[in-house]
Each structure stands twice: as structure tokens, then as C-alpha cells.
Length: 256
Image 1 (cartoon, rainbow, N blue to C red):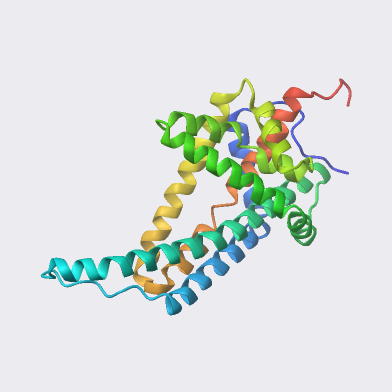
Image 2: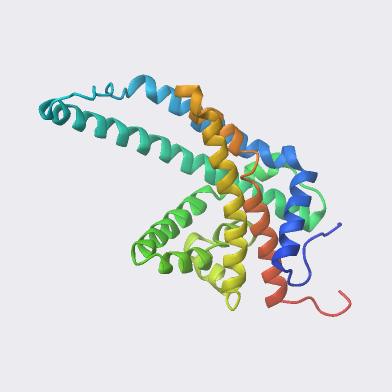
């Protein structure tokens, strides 16, 4: 077994460089799950647009009565599209993240990994992943409403939740306390890594949205495919960070 996992705490710079090294080395294997998730979400959006039709845009000189008659239908259709698309995107995106984390973990621990076995394992843990992401998502949202800062703190606190579910086989609730334990005393460092990777993804996804905008109803599909080329860096980076924090808390004995 050729273990490549960190045996000591890594700096943010080390994690960043190792993330992109691993990403480039196994590019296709990391992109495939997110590409599949993006295609599923994009195709679903296209199908939904066939069944949930947004009312035509009003003319600039529309009367108040026309606006009042048009608005409820527009809001209802928009909400229906957003909820349906968001629900599927949440499930397939969580699955893609779980697959990437498992693949990264196996590669770091064993020196080799299988996309098929990663898919099977992530599928067996998907309910815990969804439950944990729902709990943390609600808490972070409520924290963000409370003057933003509490939301940031919670996002940092729970940044390793899915890693603990996949790597340690913990339950959804147990993963919350475990993630908090791992990032304890490293709040600023965790935030720095989260911010760095988040900015990169945000910029690339934003560019993808601009590029895809002329494609009309297929814009979501095109944008999702382009975004898949960068999204894996977050699960890769935070899986490396998990092992870095685990090595800090439980260092290997000398000579190991």
C-alpha cells in the first residue's frame, strides 16, 4: 500500500498546491461525477421548461391591472422551476461530492482508487450526506441572517462534515461534532482555505454563466458542464485538509 495522505499538518499553500496536483493528475476521474451531475441537472431544467412555462414578458406600457394579473403566474412558475431544479441539483451534487471525497481518500490512503467503488460507497452514505448537508445548510442560512458573521463561523465549523461521513463512516449528527473537533483552534486557517477555493470556483462558475447565457433554455446545461471543470477542487482540497487536521490531532508515532 502506497499511502500519500499527509502525516503532518499542512499549510494552506501546501493544500492548495497538492489539490491542483492531484486534480490535474486524475482530472477525468474527478470531473466525470460533476459532469454527470451537471448534465442531469441541465437536462432536467430543459424538460421542466417544457412543462412549466413562464408567462411572456409584459410590454413596457402594460397597465397596473395587466401587471397584477401577470405577476402571480410568473412568481409561481419561477418558484416551481427553482424548487424542482434545486432539489435534483442538491441530490446529484451531494452524490458527486461524496464520490470525489471517497476517490480522493482511497487515492491518498492506498495510492489507487476506483470510480466505481467510490460511486457505490457514496451511494450507501447518501442519506447521511443529505441529512448533514440539510442540517448545516439551514444552520448556516440562519446564521447568515444574523448579521452574516455567525453564518461564516458555522460554515467553517462544519466544513469537514461530509469528509467525516465518508472517511470515518459517521452518522449525520455525529459528523457535526467531529468536524468541529477537527477545525478547533484552526478557525482562521479553515476560513482562509474555504475563501481561497470558494473564490476560484465562484469566478469560474460566473464566467461559465456568462458564456452559456446565449444558449437560451440550454444555458443551464452548458453552464453546468463548464462548471464541472472546476468544482472538484473543493472536495479534493478539504479531503486533504481533513487528513492534515487528523494528523495534527493524532500524530503518527516516531518511526511510523
